[in-house]
Length: 189
Image (cartoon, rainbow, N blue to C red; front, top):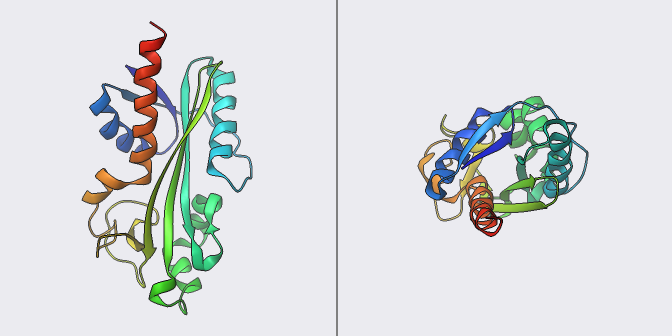
């Protein structure tokens, strides 16, 4: 089965395909730019995006929105994560947190995958809990990976990208979507 995935981010496609192959699903990238609404919830942004893309292509499709929530920064950058990463980068986030104690550096990555086929609109959310390191560590992954230490690990995703393949927020949301999509396709046959 092939699922269209509207994104300009090749990393997202690679991650989705690593998960999808377990379920016999391949994700095909399409570059249909959609307006991102401003909202506090990743699910709402992905849902509005997928409806827009569906109206343009008239085929079942998914859109994914994700970001990082840092508790000490009152959930910042949240749904503005991509923009803030471009403007401030990891060094800027670390600077904002320079006086935050280790025990208060909790954070989580969140991913929301939205699916729409013209009839059914569903969202699937994945989360990975962790904390923000005190410095950039490693060059693996992308985005905030060099400053994010997942719970149960000592290294950032940037230092050791391998755990991300198993526990990432995107893997969890895509996996939940895949389980739904396999059953959905069985039910419509």
